[in-house]
Length: 333
Ligand SMILES: *[C@@H]1O[C@H](CO)[C@@H](O)[C@H](O)[C@H]1NC(C)=O
Ligand SMILES: *[C@@H]1O[C@H](CO)[C@@H](O)[C@H](O)[C@H]1NC(C)=O
Image (tube, rainbow, N blue to C red; front, side, top):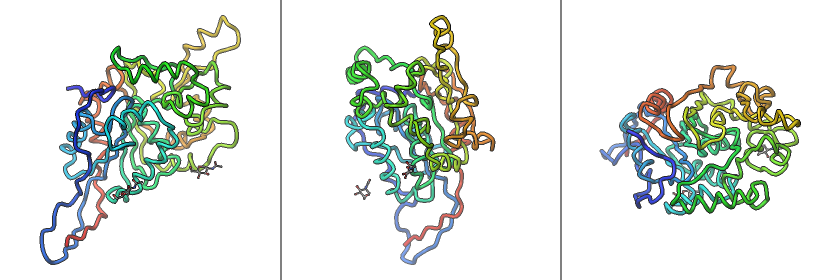
């Protein structure tokens, strides 16, 4: 079975998620101290064109709950209204969005002991930004599916009937590095064109910042925070034609083209893999520290972008989600 977590337009109105608490209902008159193993909670951040309560997301959450009975799952939202939440995947200031989500997560009682996190597509790099910038409460394992950690070198195409996507795409093409685009169009904020690297470094305020590539001293907090992850799992979709280049999901990018026109097209097709990236070699974001500890797991899944088959995500969710945390003590009134 396939769940499409990408472009779930026309989502039905559904109940907001995450009203359940891990312990249900009072059971006796005498206070009872219960010390029990609980699965570590999970936070998911949906992708472009999706919403926190789309049918695909709800189905995913329900399957995770079947796999890890008793798990608390929170689906990140920027607006309780599903259409507004979906719109916020195309329009908005990503730095502000990450800040709002940081406040949201800090405010949820069930998450206070830490949580695992799964990011779908752009939700993956946004969760990484959360880890680097705040990480309070802390993320244990971070799993990203088809995310654009080294950005995109092309704005993905839209389905013919997807007007919201088309409007955002046209606006981004109009000038991806303009101040307007960099503050209002989500995809422009992780657009990284190696042929115009200087322009990207000078104008990008999101990706260049969380990758610590912007001019000036790298922010040491970002590296220190990312290195606290237990495991960083990076999933690449083998037939991904939406993320250009698809290796961005593994921190790969196209090489900066040589100045000579003859070699430019050849260089543009060369992928610089994670372990040869300057940000890795200089350990600007703690990625090298993690990797040298054996804490970076590179995975592939078959299929196009976010064609999340059960065979793809379930083994990862078994391994990296829902680990038992046994120091939780609850008082049942
Ligand atoms: C924090 O939680 C309270 C109560 O649930 C809610 O009213 C408030 O809006 C939340 N704040 C944030 C930043 O999510
Ligand atoms: C580094 O990042 C932290 C966390 O976001 C922030 O509080 C701090 O101001 C940043 N430092 C610099 C020099 O920008």
